[in-house]
Image 1 (cartoon, rainbow, N blue to C red):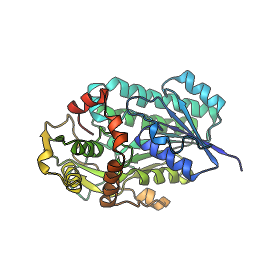
Image 2 (tube, rainbow, N blue to C red):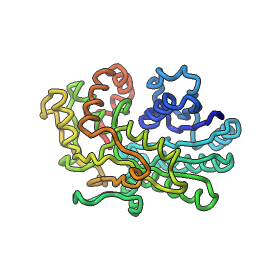
Image 3 (cartoon, rainbow, N blue to C red):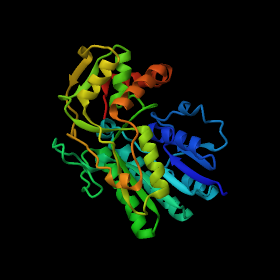
Length: 339
């Protein structure tokens, strides 16, 4: 049997890192190449369990460096590209949009060009529900794959632009592609600038937990392991050119999430610190995953089971996240909050 080569960009990040571990452990006949620039949120210590496995390979590179990417694609004949690499923190995009355009738009275009020239079997672009904009609080409304793109932040605008580039390379050049758009992820190895890991880490450190506005903004939460199984399915079974939404019908307000974590850890709600709302803060995200479910996917985590597992993981791995938020990052977390 011919060994398949899978390039995973952003494989030192949160979702990409979990996907790398999932693929390395599931597919012994696949060589998994983790390509990452190792910027502030990139961390390889999470891969210590798989780093000596023969089917795991690491490449440090910038996806926006066309020369390096073209050389890589000429040397390694990849079968699939699964593209996670992106700047993803909304607050950072508000203060520094340029880096988001460079990485998320130009970087995607560089990868698409290399994939087109190499004739890969499929390019899977991992996007976000934020490209759709926001929903009202009406619980009967959901994002579908046909919902118009109306991004609200520089981050979501850069992801929408990259989505359109991927679609264009399919229509113009015939590059086989799929686009997945997921709801908010949570789980192990989450860099603690986002709501759930930031809340856990601050509570365990006895610090106030910032909550934007009145805390009533709603997100649809998806455990990262369920996201990994969805991408695996789309990579192997997704219809060429199609978009698939990935969500688990686990809507919670930000305040509900924070209170759940506080209660689980046996702490006081006096730790909650309501702060000035973020610019352009979307009201609600909610995904209709029917198309993906019809392809054969089913989430395994409810929010209750997933958040309990995630909190326990942070309790068991305090050394990891303690190192991550030490030093230069600590000052940042005192000032900035979360998606």
